[in-house]
Image 1 (tube, rainbow, N blue to C red):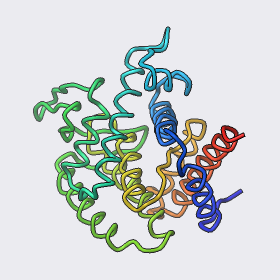
Image 2: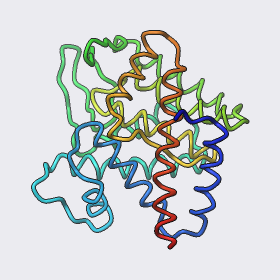
Image 3: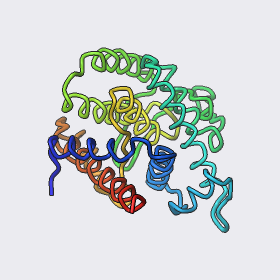
Amino acid sequence: MVMNFKELQQLIKRYNSLTKGAINHSLYTAYAITHHSTAIEGSTLTEGQVVNLLEYGKPAQNKPFEHQLMAYDHYKALVYVEQNARTKTPVTPELIKGIAAQVMKGTGGVINVAMGAFDVSQGDYRLCSVRAGTRQFPDYKKVPAMVNRLCADLESAIKGAKTFEQKCLLAFLAHFELVSIHPFGDGNGRTARLLMNYVQIRLGLPPSTVLKQDRLKYIDALEKARKTENLEHFYIFMLNQYGKFLKREIKSLENNAI
C-alpha cells in the first residue's frame, strides 16, 4: 500500500502521543535507526546486539569489531545531529563534515591518492573520483561548491517550509542531494540519511530511516531518480519507508504499554 501524507501525519500524531512521557523511548528509536542504517552499509549486527552494545556496552560475540565501531559511531553521529537540530544550528559545510567525521571516526583514516591525502575520519572531502556500480559521481573538484550550494539552498528552504508535505519532502531532498554529490571517501549513505534526520528534527518531525530489508529497493529508487531526473519515485519510496518505520515504533510502544 502506498502511504500518503495524510496517513503519515496521522501516524506521527499517534507516535507523538505514545512517546509523550515515555522514558528513554527516543534512545531506542535511535538504536533502531542506527541498526538499519549501518546494516544497509554491511554491518552484521542484529538489532538486539546493537542495543546491547549501545545501552550496556556489551560487544557482540563473533561479530567483526569494525561493525561494532560502525554502530557506535553512527549512534554518536545521530546524537550530534539531534543536538544541532534542536539548537537550530544552520546547515553549513562544517555541520555536514562534522556528521561525516563522526560516522567514520572509528573506521575511517587517511587515504592517499594522486591528488594528495584526505582523512575520512576527519570529514575531509574526497580528492578522487568515485563510482558505485555503473554510477559515476561528480568530479571531486566540484564537490566543495556543490556542498556549499546545497547548504545555502537547504537553510533557505528550512526557513520557508511551512506545510507538513513541504517539511517531509525537504528532508528527503536533503538526503537525495547529499548522497548524489557523494562528497566523502566513505560513509556517504549514512551521512545523507543523518542529514535527513537533522532536517526532520529541526522541523519538528520524528526521525526516520531506510529499513535494511528494503536496501535493494532503496538503491533502485535512488538510481531511477537520477536517471530520470525526477524525484517522484524516490519521494514515494521514502514516504513509505517513513510510514513503515513509524508503524514499527508505534507497535513497540503499544506492546510495552500493555
